[in-house]
Image 1 (cartoon, protein in one colour):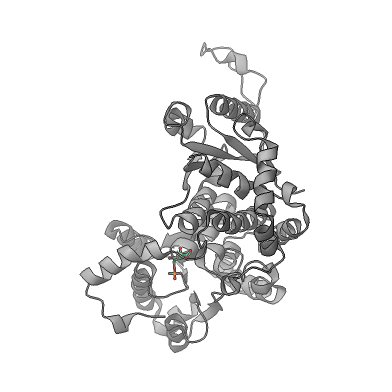
Image 2: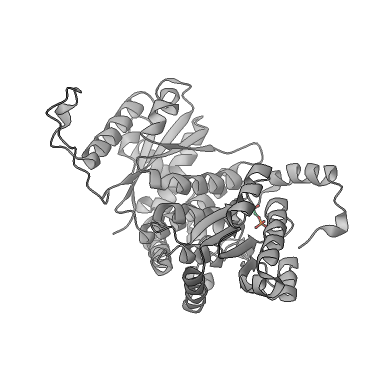
Length: 430
Ligand code: PA5
């Protein structure tokens, strides 16, 4: 089974014919992308999943992860943006055992947080994975120095090196040189993939495997989605229909998209999605602002704005068809709480009713809404989702007329920081 898109709720905003016309108007450019005839060869390494997630790499990752799982209490994932979000999305959804504990660092400069991490690992058997394509990014770079120094003081230089894995650009990057000098195990951050498209490579797969996630299932899901995208007619292809709808809505003045769900385990997945679309499309004074909502909680906060506020946003729902677990409502005859009308029901039923009610109320209240139906919450479907959204983002960026693979806007704050901190030009690592 595959993830499908349902846009029947959009009918009072845009018709099936509008969607088909949008696809027709862009047919050549979309077909070129799908047939692999488009430019951007140097950033499309993720399209062929086997290229950077093949059997040999999977076996190597499984071996590294097994060793870490057997001998560690905590695993530090040091990275930011595309270097940590994909793995974190899956780990937060599937890491039930939480052994080893996965600790995220390199994504904040908070002294409180850094001190806490350094203290938390003191009595533990710790491994660390520094992930950085360009090892000049300040947050992961300096956090790694703190962790490295701490681990060297805990274990000595040689034993610390056995507990550190680096994932960085190959062919002489500064992180590779540092790894060689120290003796760290080194994984390639593929040169032909940018951070936010890197989840199905060693970047995302190694931390997932350490958390006990079946990475073969993630890869299988991504590959099945890749196959569907290559073979489905454009009008039935979710990676084409979704960007076409976004583009139509954008041209009609809808400039905010809310990715919403009723399963909190999707929370970090939506953060990954926000980063993917925000950094890929927000440029040249264009782009849809991506936001995320976790319902029911956010029905009692942003839900008010969505229902009654400015009508410049649309909603995309992640609908989990099989909620995986049952939780029957317990009866209570001895107490009057006015909830007896729910007797005999199950939380999964209530959650489904909340979803149906929300999409009806929002779309009837003037919010265009569409749905991705996700059969189950499993690593396999996460693989499908990662690939589907990466591909959709690629097509969406092209339809919008921006380069979905660069992020020039991120440099502005970095340059200001480097100027304040008096970083010399020659110290810029590659
Ligand atoms: O998607 C991207 O390219 C960015 O979000 C990067 O992943 C992020 O800036 C981290 O970069 P690096 O891995 O080079 O430290």
